[in-house]
Length: 248
Image (cartoon, rainbow, N blue to C red; front, side):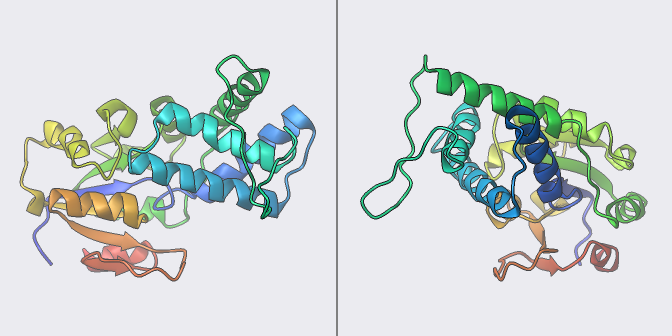
């Protein structure tokens, strides 16, 4: 194990349960706006659509504003709220909402309502607080997260162990998303240390966290608490957060 100085730890699905956070905010939004109780299967449809949109954002194929519209336009059409249209083989065909359409306005309202609920929802993984407090005794810890600044700041205000982080770097405030190596500037401006060998990047996403670590030349720890059958390319891989204290 190298003599790392800094731990760069991802937030969602690493320390906080993003899937449960998302489920709560989503179901509350559709209950209030449409008096509709989303099923487990419907929530899974949204999860898939949202994940695909974030992958497009990571690859710079859409903007953050386009993501916010695209995910709910596709989800609401999948629910039949806009009616549904399909190709000859039954594949959903989503409409391109015009800038002045009532449907676009509704999608934007739903997205804002959802994000406001997200900003008030915090679901910590049980081991996150004790593990982070233990690591803070030995390392300088920075939280690195993609997301909307006011949503993430709102959620972090309710995190019981937020005090262990020396600073919090959010993609909206840096001006780019992980895995873009420019995100690293948001860290080095705080530490004054540009040597990637001094950093260890810890996170659950192979395409965001681990790819970011690779892009800046730092070692990585892949946290795969949800076994999805994927194989990572990180220097280290752990199945639960407590393994971090053993590793480090």
